Length: 434
Image (cartoon, rainbow, N blue to C red; front, side):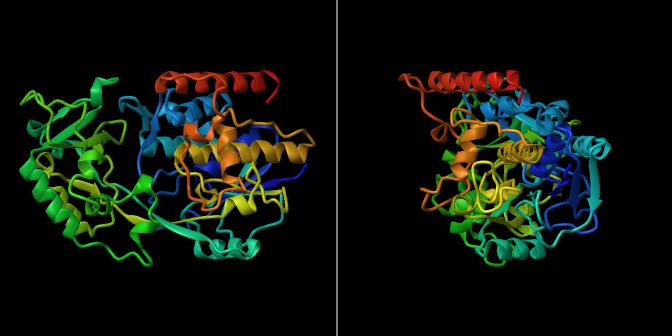
């Protein structure tokens, strides 16, 4: 039987390698770390989370919640490890990032059908292969993919949020609460009054940025917009975005604050927290100066500052099919953010589907048909939709999933009905031998 090469051991690559191996396929998994590190990675572990430790909302009324549940039922390695290393985050699935990456690494390295090769790949090999080198693809591999397709990459930039120690947060000026009291009180809320917010915004918009070659605000994906870029859009932009106070009540005043910065637990011990929505590319000294203006973070100890890094993705609608494979050569597939899916769960889903399809191709079986009524299928159909004129990275959302035949007025009820329909399809596919 053919050996499938998987290049890159991020979320998509790790999931792809696992799914192939679980189906009896021999896998060679190539990963350049730790011999060569990207600017945003810090360890040699697989599936290292760069931006945030959150896999986002977990409710079925939320599209990413549906996508996670589909993956769980389909035996996703990433979802299994995420659940095992879960930390409290209200209605979200957040993980101890170190423990999560270690668990994925151990399971991959111990699988009898997976051989890990610590080596940077600098060419697109003959298939069967799944390339999942991610948004931080090395220059050599990036050039090789560009040469392979004869197409130019599109570029945009991602930003990661800073981390602070729990003990350095002034809890006399902060409190625990989830917005609208949903789930447990899993967020530390740092309030600002109008005067404090005005001073903060004034310094934030004028703070000195780190140099990022080729950076333009318009090229930043909205979901990872640096906080200083958002602030430049208008005085109240942050108050209607990540700093919105709606659904929160300051226990000292008994009232809704003017603005609130939320912190989310970042490790299992609860000793490190990240600033939610504070992706940034300010210089490190400026981050310390400006973010310390938040009253509860006046004496905050920053254990990691925010960083900015390049992200690259393909013109997938022109190049890839619904299973993330090259339209010209079905044994060369791609997965992860380079295909135009955006987010941890979406990257995992692309790796899953690319691997399931690849296994079927080389084993002479029919490729499972994930329809548009499922989140997994809808995502693959979106990135391969040749009618899309201006292709941009996309998070999973209900607008790309097939609508219901019957009309349901209330949004939450409608979304739940879509989710239940999708899960019924997934369950039927599993019962049929998926």
